[in-house]
Image 1 (cartoon, rainbow, N blue to C red):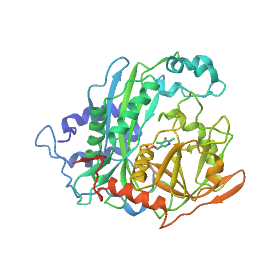
Image 2 (image 1 turned 180 degrees about the horizontal axis):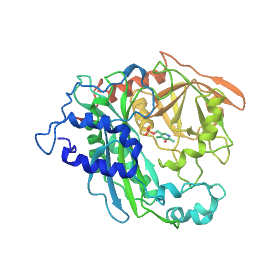
Image 3 (image 1 turned 45 degrees about the horizontal axis):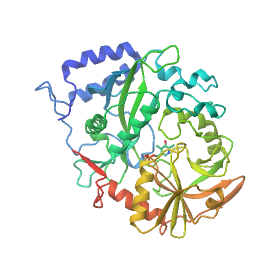
Image 4 (image 1 turned 45 degrees about the vertical axis):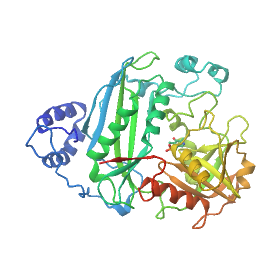
Length: 424
Ligand SMILES: *Cc1c(COP(=O)(O)O)cnc(C)c1O
């Protein structure tokens, strides 16, 4: 049963929200009133009155990848040196943060060595390359996973949520933050999906993208881990990540060898919020020049592929599929790992190795993987002004891998690996 808030709590929630921000409350009040009137008031633990097959008012054919406010978000807090104990669903809306909260203050790019104290505690070799590490120690990690509506319309499928939970734990450890247990993480995700069930697109139209977020929310002035942490889970219905009508429209990448996403000894291997803002400028420029995304190379030799801004890269040559080995600078994607397994099961040789730019140029097919992009075929890569094109379309390996993966994720093919988790 959902732990949804009773009517009795409405006034306290509103008081809380009025104190945090007036305007959003006024503009959201109507929606909430509707939400609350949709619940029976017969008992204090209320049952949703939305039928399983009831949908939110969304044009499912126009879904892209953007923020759509849904009904509820999950919130759980914990003090430093403590463990997360209990969280709850709140109406989706603004959150309140102290102006000196850790996550807001230690986010600037700096070369000040004092910024690396938490890093040094964990990675003794970090100071060797501080000239490369002009990065932040911002306390924030996030995850991304999707819920698909099952074919029969009742119930939802999550894909390998345990992997997201353990990756958040690893990232939290790297950033000196406490993290929810795997069970707490998965329960929070499930509750968020069920509470927002009317926002999960019909089968075939998209999915509910779920965003767990862990931030240092307590106030700090000197550089130190924050005294309080907040774990949030919110969700939004999504269609295709890249703006295209077709699920498999090829993307065009440009190799970037001046700006680097991650550096040895840094945080490229964890899904920390720190890693994304520093590449926005290069990404915007690439988009301005007509490319879909950037392909990063290693910052030392500028010769080996790393990954795209938020997805991993694979190349195919003959029967051999290669992807850069993850050695700290590359985010070890759950889609990446799943595709490696599916491709091996289908008879391909899959190598995790150093992948040089020459190998990329020489490839037959190239594709990117990630929860958001799923499997995206790469139509072209531009390197130092030269454009190289790859096979795309119906009869490609990436198309077959896309289908094998999404059939499992959507419950259309038997899951022999125990990857999917049902929510009902
Ligand atoms: C999230 C992410 C990926 C993909 O990981 P998945 O677990 O497959 O979603 C790849 N690269 C970066 C930089 C990411 O942030």
